[in-house]
Amino acid sequence: MARYWFRQKQFGYGATPNTWQGWLCTFGGVLAIVAVAFGAHFLRDHAERLALIAVGIPLVMIPFALIIHAKTEGGWHWRWGRKS
Image (cartoon, rainbow, N blue to C red; front, side, top):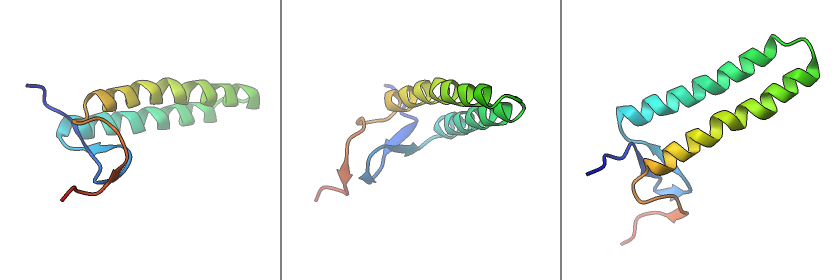
């Protein structure tokens, strides 16, 4: 049986970490985005900064979102709370 790292949110769309692996994945994703932004800070040319951010953020976020989607029990869809 597969162990899911994230659980569905009770209200709204998306998921929240449920295990230490989920929290580690979330921390790693945030750290990668901070690294891209911090790396852009050291570029002198504004066009290069913009290019790094425009390419780097999606390169981090797309795999991150795919991992979260794959490791969420029940998938992602809008939720209005618990069914009675």
